[in-house]
Image (cartoon, rainbow, N blue to C red; front, side):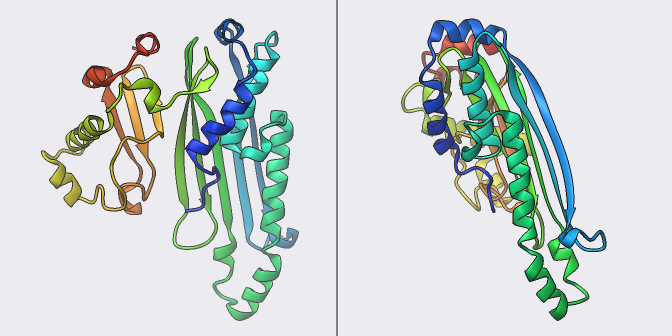
Length: 282
């Protein structure tokens, strides 16, 4: 599947570069006043500019930090990260409006490169060529949760570039606003958490889908395309932690994405020394 983002871990490293220059005390005060605005764009462009020919549809919505104005470093650092994970790393240093404009222009320019191929295909397969060239890409970046110390940002990506079906993915980004750094599982859990957390994930999945054992879940197809282990693609919430597995990661495409939410009380014995952050969410 073609992904817009390189990898979650690589983006976490990218973010740390932008966040490194700010001071914790200033970050905390500014984070208390964080506010967000959004940009939306939708464009439909036909090959050769002819409405009788196939078209691409691009829809992008992007939430970005608009305040606090008295902490430009925080705002710009945060936006650099949000742009990187929503649109791509090359847009990280831009203003949101300019980044979105360039992103749209690039997508349309890439689509127009199909015109010679479409003409050739039309000559060889006049009756069926059109459908394969009706592309779309829908991208949405939105704030899932925001407290004085934690920001959870969700990116949904859905694209079709010909073929049997489109592809889609969801990425969750969890940011420590006090220290301006992404939160990873190692930051939240005590050492040696991987094995017991994996067992809890299988147990919760079995409960969610109405079976009694891990084997029954595997018989249904879970774990057939990849191992079910704790993923860095998680979402912090008031009820607990939700682990998100995109299509193909642990199950076939037909089964869709899988989300497993572990309540705080169920994983309390595995958590590390970030009790201050966890209590803020509960």
